[in-house]
Structure formats: structure tokens, C-alpha cells
Image (cartoon, rainbow, N blue to C red; front, side, top):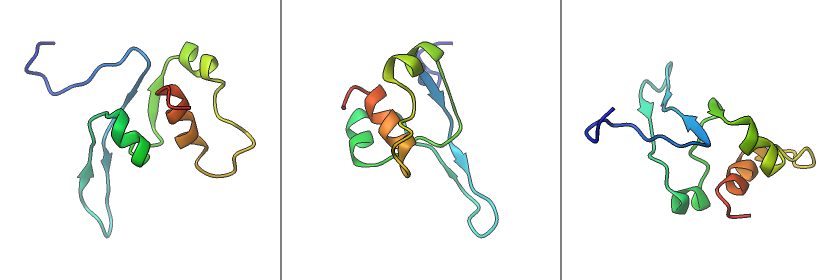
Length: 80
């Protein structure tokens, strides 16, 4: 891989774009930004992450009924 590749690598997690089909036929991909993450959850539900980082942040909070993934991403990014 060289500097011209369109790829962001992180030692903690990897996520991809989302491809919509049906009524919406498009793709959606956002480059990682901590500032943007504070405004919205742009990380799709499919992702890969290290077990170590998952365990260090405490994983998903079972007390939260909705947006538990967003809470997790914010803790992983060090904002909570």
C-alpha cells in the first residue's frame, strides 16, 4: 500500500461504506473524523475491531436500549 491508496487503516477498527438498494440505489462512505463522530453516528453496523479495544472500553452497554453502538464508538474515540 502506498500514499496514493484511498484507504484509512486503524489499529483499533475497520469499517466500510454502505450500499443501498431498492428505493435508494447509492453508496455512502465517510472518512473517519472524531469531530464528525461527535455530531452523528456514521459508522455502519458492520465493522471489524480488535478484541482488546472492545474489552478495554467495556463493550456495548447493556443498559442502553437504543444507540448502544454509537455510545460504544464515542467511548472508543475517547470522547466519553
